[in-house]
Length: 427
Ligand code: NAD
Image (cartoon, rainbow, N blue to C red; front, side):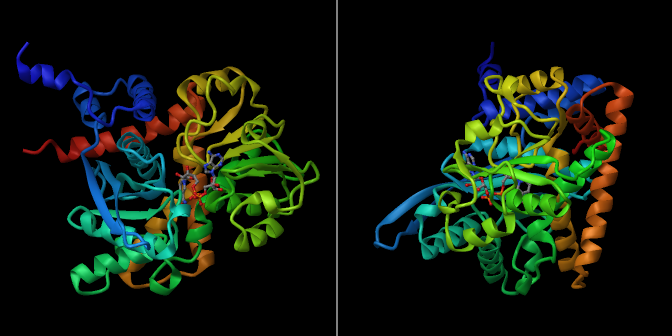
């Protein structure tokens, strides 16, 4: 074998367990579609993966160097789009898997974007506001050639928020010499953010759950909901589900869970978290661990924290009728198979949590046009896109006799493949 061929056989750095999981899901859909092998090859690796070292001065005047990543998976349909995560486990494989899922999600929703994801390996809770600001600004500066409104548009994800997006927007604008609000989405309203963006992912999850209820002939009233991860997505999904008449009986965060069979007072918990970091200091139920929470009998389980939470180890004990994947990649392929055999109706991540990127798209369009929409218009358009996507996935899943994840992936991959074939292969 020539040295060149040997080199090709070595695994790329991003081929970690979570990337293998994304590849396995893609492979199943590609097989089902009998995808042209030449196209298949082009989807299996990210288009571009950037690693940066980010030196910043800490408040005690010492210098620390953090590792940052940005991965662009595919840009066939438009600029890449995806969140920025600040978490101790961020790595190249995770960003690559999340970028691939973003590609499928944007295509499924009919958005003119490819998929990206990035982040910094850090514990944002252990950094001061000033340290976080310096970290964000230096990270943005290191990525300056690889992001832009027509290139790649970041958004918030785990551990980041509107303030982080505001610092990214300001840093990018300083380099350009003029304000460029459309460089990021999920930014504060004061600098061109969109109404409805903060709640959008949770709201989209609820639109999907309501569609699933209708399909399964269930009424929302008093349906028991369990939510893992009470951050941006989990908290808003909980509040909107409660407003729809459901009963949220358990929630959790990274430290602990809370259960109350009569229903947790979600607005009171959200208020509590405005001045407290964690759920554990809230008196409104009994303590429970995250592992126990996932196995509580309920109508709908909403994992809204991190990936790989439902595995072949606990899938047999998951006791819900509907699994609405608000988080990205919460279910491993082995667990998926077990849930399928047990008849759990899974609303896959690339559909369930696509409300965020959909309103991010609205924010980007509003920024480019300098024309801002009313909140009702945003929520109505979101509902339209989410419900149409849900129905298209459900209809394909019924006609092809495949589960909802496979149907969603097949729709997305088919769309991008058509576009790839129309564009051809450069040069
Ligand atoms: P967030 O940082 O606001 O909240 C995350 C929540 O999960 C927090 O309550 C945190 O304490 C909890 N958590 C962290 N580690 C945990 C663990 N090991 N066990 C249990 N809970 C844990 O993040 P978010 O923006 O709400 O994102 C949550 C999930 O939704 C992620 O998977 C993210 O990729 C996905 N998502 C987010 C958006 C968005 O618009 N923010 C869009 C699509 C998908």
